[in-house]
Length: 197
Image 1 (tube, one colour):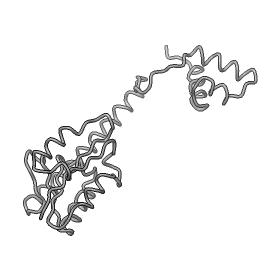
Image 2 (spheres, rainbow, N blue to C red):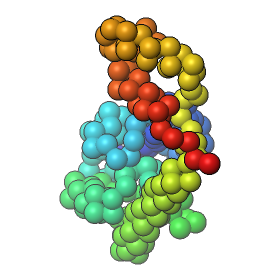
Image 3 (cartoon, rainbow, N blue to C red):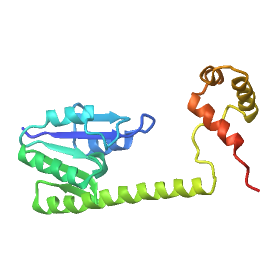
Image 4 (cartoon, helix red, strand yellow):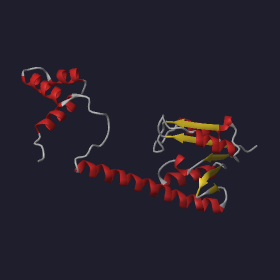
């Protein structure tokens, strides 16, 4: 008897799969046939629950996902995956693809999947390009890039520099500050750098 196998994924542990799970269960997937990866990037080749979902697929079964980006990033990989499923006699159903439900076992669904996979990859690459451009621009403008707040003050760094100049090993001084030697040297150089008028 043909089964529906559901797969959900989030890239970070603090994200929730609640919405994906609700959509998959509403599509008729039994909770026992639902596989979920938490904190696993779509770019990774191996995803433990995804691998289990694929192992559970048999001839006539259908893998169901909510959106195309749950499969991965690359159009080529997504299309190869859809072909692999077809060769195994299994189908792929994407619930929210182009505003509707797409089943790759039909010619129209297969064509739409191909188009949407290319668009999904393009969207990912555009987002990545925007983030890279934004970080470059912020760096060029000397703006904060975020990250962890600076806990070690400039005064502490100056005191540490004096310790190193008096003969203390830099690695030990940096360790005592709670930072790596490379970070200590980087902060030291920043203090020596002339400030802009």
